[in-house]
Image (cartoon, rainbow, N blue to C red):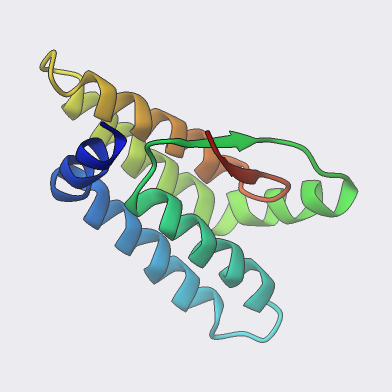
Length: 121
């Protein structure tokens, strides 16, 4: 069932969301200091392409907190707003509610990507 969900997700918003993460990662790659942040963006782009059957655990320490603050200032808010807007649009219909919930999960991840670990269910 998750394969069908991932396929439908990819068509109805996953492609655009994943490409957004990929594009932000490419922008971070312009500077040498931003390469570790870009690696996290590329990892989370794969989650954004296919989020079903994946669980996110939050944690981390002081370095993750510092990276999250820098991330929010430069990239986190636009990505979170994109996921939030997609989530609201998808939740308009009953069929779109599971997809909207995934967008809300990704919006939270867009605000705090460092220290987050992606696990398969």
